Image (cartoon, rainbow, N blue to C red; front, side):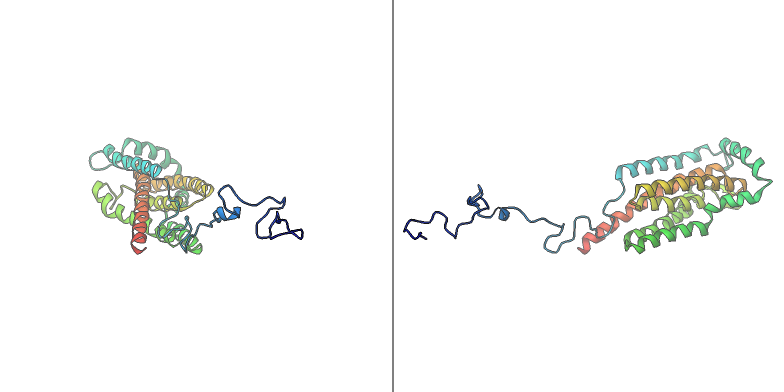
Amino acid sequence: MSTASGAPDPFPTDRPYDRVGRANVGRSGTTDPTAAQPAESDGTESGTAPADSHRGGPPHPASPLATALTAAAGATVTAAIPLSFPPGGGPTSFDLAVNAQVDPRLDPRPWVAEVLALATNTGVVLAVLCGGAAWFAWQRKWWEAATMVAVPEVAVAINAWALKPWWSRPLQDYLAYPSGHTVHLVSVVATLVLLLRSARARIALTAVTAVAWSGAGIGMVALDYHLATDIVGGTTAGITLAIVLYWVSVYTARTLGARSG
């Protein structure tokens, strides 16, 4: 293009310019600098799901190292306690010391012991379990809801059908070690702690459970339902079983998700 005087036009209209009149040409030779910049991604590409979505299993599961160490410690304590049992599975010196502190205070007040032991009542524990499952289901977290139900109930079954017969500690007309009611309560709470993402919720739940567990243990000892070592062993067994079954659920869900994908 030329000017009216016939001289070439130094600013042809077909050449891009920025606001100060310089040619908008980048060092790479592109005329539009935005063309060289990748578009911002929202985590999806060609219809794929965002990185934090998950097909079976949580997007951010519990720490494998921390849970492995906790489970190993719990299994060690559970297996070591029976080594202190006298022949026939009677009370240990620790059991006798606890009974000496509890019985004189609560034997005259059995109703107090009944109230304290309520935390391990099957109905109360199932209410906590169902409440946790309902909370996850309300958020459409179906894997978490299913795991919340399955893990504690499988833990109770393993304790009743494998651990109790293995150690075979009789008390009255049943096998007492590890305490089944304690395994149920602890495995429900441990599963919920593993599934919750909020650190504050986990801390609060653990603190409340520790208080309830202490009272329930005293109540069960006072009512002669269990010896103290049954309750300690039930606690460590419940934690260990919950962790192991939680990871079984994680890897099973991921394996099924990968196969279906």
